[in-house]
Length: 94
Image (cartoon, rainbow, N blue to C red; front, side):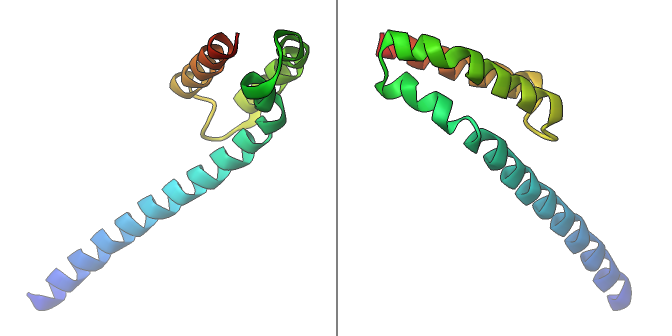
């Protein structure tokens, strides 16, 4: 009986460990790809309308790359959220 409980707990522990590991890998992957956008996002906060317009093609290419190759960040929800945040910041800075 005790051995069965221990086995159940170990199985549960392993599932939790796998979930945590997957979440950590997802976070690392997302940070890696979002960091590549930093130089294109900065003008949205401090640039003029002209500098923002100049950086948009490179920003869109980087987002396209993320959508194509990112393992976790390429979902419709995450891409929609990213575009909404970019658009909101463009409006705030104008």
